[in-house]
Image (cartoon, rainbow, N blue to C red):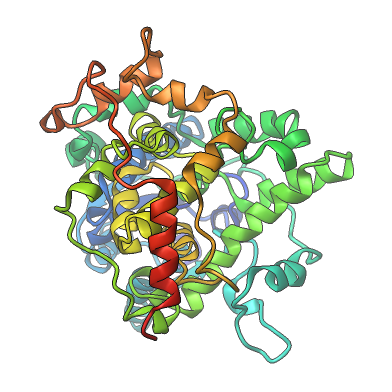
Length: 473
């Protein structure tokens, strides 16, 4: 073994070359670097939309590596066994990767680091997915934060290192190991006919992510504070899908937001707060991993939420047929684009968990299957925050009224018309695209009558408040 032995760099949710501390460190050694991606059980567990989006991201990333004279080696199987096989094939003496923070990834990576380390290999992990490692932020008592506002105050003035440039050169090995073909993995199979509809709204890859960031910071960030809750406007960064796969790094976004604030953009501070909201979600998930599958507040375990997904009202919610136009438009936006506006997500989640008294996990799991920007921490925290079982000081009486929310944030009905075809003489292209994306088994068409509300805004709120006020815990 010598300093000329290759480094295997294991990419996961970090499909970029710039703002990448681990990959920059690997290339700086001047040793051959072999980029790899492993299709393991955690990839298998992804929902239909995020798995399909991963496939697009891998294709874009592989093309970017090719431009640099490198390659992305694809392998399928158990991660530890696959890494051992690659070590044997390549003579690599180091396996490096960027950290993940969900409990399954932590368990996998810990086992790999220990097992490979015991054989003398340099198994090393790097920061890169977050601005602040979760264990570096704590209260004055040395405990994790449980409320967002003090978390923001604790980190807002911290120094964040400047993002690394993409390596000028990626040292290549004398010979490359064999690679699977990406198309053989069929990562988009579960999307069925919806893939063609959603594809028109997705531009994968690092270059597209950077372009979107710079366009946002040169325009919509100015009015972000006032317009970010308006789904009828193009007023947000739409960076979430890129962050979810690491096609852009958080340090790059943070520094761009700081520059915009220094240049006087009135919405920049709120934009930075939203980025730190993502950090807070990861902080909670790391310190309290039960956030992903159990009530973050254990005293909610006895709350009588419904869980039968065969129920007619839950099917209506999933299909955008609740009769609440703002809710239905949001669900249809998700099927048509793979994304959903953040304000709409809150209203949709509130209607399911409060007006329909349905367990937040039903909604969380559905989003996990349908969102191209699915993120384990943000998805779980968002659903629990709205449901009342998560981190919030006064959750039970906050019930979003979908009608008043529509009046306030979609005042001209633009968003609702954009996504609901029924009742329109000349439906929009986007509204019609919904029917091309959904399963044929739903037997829906633009000519159907639009339904009456399955639960009215007033009655649903009253029932939710009554249940909360008389809860037996």
